[in-house]
Structures are given as C-alpha cells and as structure tokens.
Length: 113
Image (cartoon, rainbow, N blue to C red; front, side, top):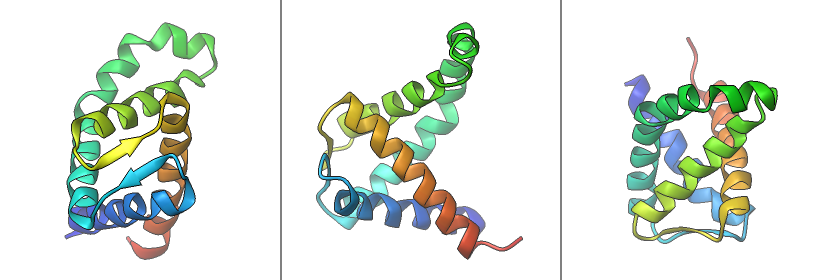
C-alpha cells in the first residue's frame, strides 16, 4: 500500500512538473503514470551502479556530481517514454531537482510512519 501511495505521489508530481517548468512536457496522466514507474525502476536499478562507477568524480566534486547523474536518469527516461519530453540536459537536471523536492515534500506530508 505504501509503495502504491509513493508511486501515485511521484505521478502527481511528474504530472504537475510542466506547470512549474516550461521545458518539461507530459502529454497525459497515463504517460505520467508510466514515466513515474520507469523513473522509479531506473533510479532503483541503474542509478546505484552509476554512483559506484563515478565515485571518484563524486568525491572530487564533494557530491555535486550526483546532480549530473540525477539529470541523466531523468533525461534518459524522457527519451524512453513516449509523450514525456525534456528540452535538454540542463532542463533535465533542474527538473530532477524540482521533482525530487516536490515528491519529498508531498511524501513527508502525506505518508505517516
């Protein structure tokens, strides 16, 4: 139940993202549902591998390279999911930051432990 609620929160956040940033487009709620699912899978499976592989660069930049990895994951999902578009890499980095913050805030407000 908790996982489904988190997925719905991420979907709502992704669906609202075009209203916050002009460089992101989501065609429909179905697209947002699928993109949130793919984004969750990519962040669960591929992101940890990239973090380990880029650990020296991440340490050298004092952790700021994680923003680049998050932007790359967001951009990759936008290329994979039809109907979900991001204008460019910088837009993907900014969208990933906004997406993370808004999802975190909504999760903190709506999910009680």
